[in-house]
Amino acid sequence: MSWPWTKTADVAGLLTTMNKKWSELHAEVPFSYSFLDDRFNNTYKNEQHIGLILGIFAGLTIFVACLGLFGLATYTAEQRTREIGIRKVLGAGITSIVTLLSKDFVRLVVVAFLIAAPVAWWVMNQWLLDFAYRLPISWWIFALAAILALLISLFTIGYRAIRAASANPTESLRAS
Image (cartoon, rainbow, N blue to C red; front, side, top):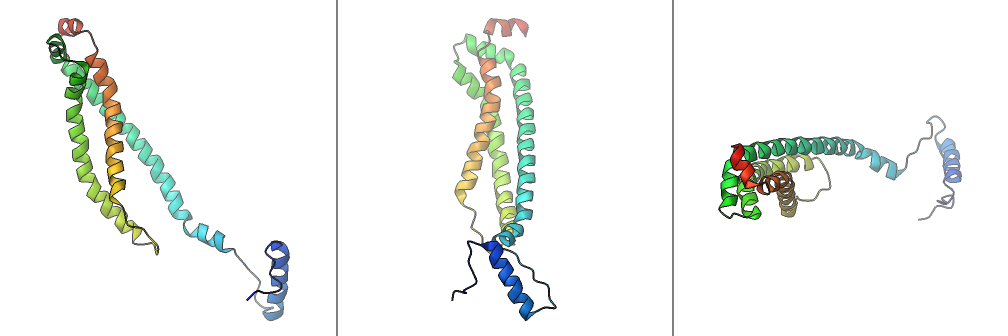
């Protein structure tokens, strides 16, 4: 049913007409209105703010973790300088040395992911229970998170590992 006074092209005129009609019917109650899209946006405004704050803290956490991982990779490369030099003299390539230095860190990232993924799944499901309309959490989100975690860790470790692998072996053997 279409009301004759509802012309959505002229919202101000529509509100004035509605105010007059409301005053005729309920003069003792003031006329108040809100738009449905504003109400919908206000409903999830809290979650949007929480999402922004959590995103900022997640970025800072990843940055600090990368700094720690870089420091640990630097320490490991320094501790194994002599071994790397001997391997290079015996014919090891950069790829095998980078693999040697990176595999322990990759194992740590995989173990951390295996511990964190079920916890994250449970927490997200508990949080989503509060919403009337929700989607299930797909497996590919966790697979993407695992791939991103591995790529970030390999990028962080890789720089230091390549630098250690491309160093002159005579210098590393003489310095040790």
